[in-house]
Structures are given as structure tokens and as C-alpha cells.
Image 1 (cartoon, rainbow, N blue to C red):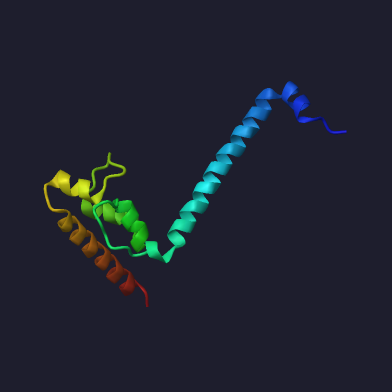
Image 2: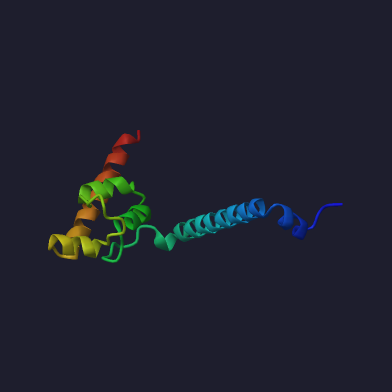
Length: 119
């Protein structure tokens, strides 16, 4: 006969708590991964027109360009995580369209380089 949950709780509170915590963390990251996959699998989110609300990382995912390339070319400060294109333009005192144009040039150059690499 297997012991009930009460008996396990009575004898192994720490172990059962740790197990429940591990399951909760696993579910959190599992759901997050599925939501991320579903969002980016939607064709409407690929190659979206670049807008001021987007972050360089979002643009990189949407346009299938490595995030590091866009961050390096835009010279995004190291300490910033979720800086939007508009915020980046405001920090530099330039119109958002200038940053958007720069990103479009980065994407075009990256794709041209990738096309040259393929035989």
C-alpha cells in the first residue's frame, strides 16, 4: 500500500516543498517557451515594419538577424536591456526615423553578406 500525500507531507515536508517548487518553475518556463514559440511562429510577426516601440532584440527576432549585430551597429549602451528604438533616438537627440533607417541598412547589409556566403 502506498502512503498518502498526508503521510509524505508529515515525514518529508522539505522534500515535497522542493519538488512542488521545481514543478512550478518547470511549468513557468515551459509555458513561457510555448508562448514564445507560438508568437514567433505567426507570420504576422515576421519582418514587421520597424516602429519606435520595438526594441533592437524584437527587431532582430522579427527580421531573423542576430541580436548582437543590431546592438553593436547601433552602439546600444551595455547596461541597457529593454531600450526602445524611440528611447534610443531620444537619448541621441535624433528623429526615430533615423534609427529606423539605420536598422534597415543593418538588416540589408546582413542579408547581403549572408547571400554572398551561400554558394
